[in-house]
Image (tube, rainbow, N blue to C red; front, side, top):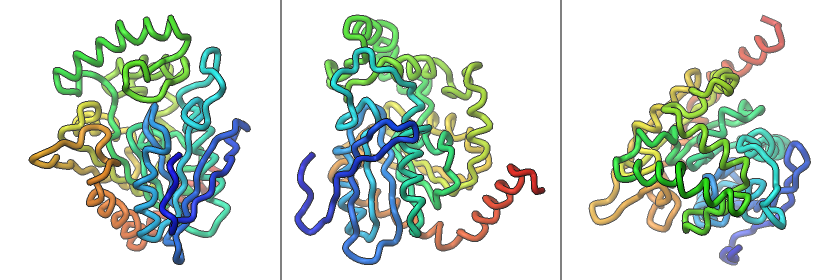
Length: 310
């Protein structure tokens, strides 16, 4: 991982997932009194080092930041992915949930910034009620029918022909061979491929109906933004997915790409996206400051119902 600027304090830590799997994470610390702890929940097949620039920017704006590599990815990858067993949703159920649990032992509010899968993961967390506010970029339903026609053709070719051959040959999803991301375990490939067949992702999967109730339990303030030129998660794909957050205090927004450039699916966190980061960080703190008590009241009522007290 590249070294941060000398004026930013960062620690490499070993984070134990809820099931004990060892994860590599980095904590970045604000030099002044922190406004909160911020978790960066990355996209599928994207190592945490990709979010370093955003993490450093958030630190300069007064946040402590935690990034992590999910199991099977980056610095949390085993010696070989061949034979490595896991479910796609372990990244939320076990890995990101452990990050929330760790930060929940501190007194600061916990903020969430997600990218693609990172926006999906909120509804899968067993402890999402600990989050004060969530902001996600480029999260969509994954179905090729929501994508531009040229991208849809490419995605169908990948899922139906190219990737099955690669996985059969290598024993895992050797995505790096195509220059599209980090290699992924077979279990991630199998789950992802199946859910991308449905217009509303796993909400339409008969074997995944339990997630409907999981997402319905989310009452956190959430904002989902996506670029109009995001080929994998255009606005209509995002809208198809976020319907699952039916009880969250939900907002959506569309980002217009620059006239002389593009945002795509990865540009949210590249150099030049600082104006998006400013809006994100302002939104997170403003929504917490203005609406913490109403949201907390909703959470307490939900917790009481769960315990059978009301």
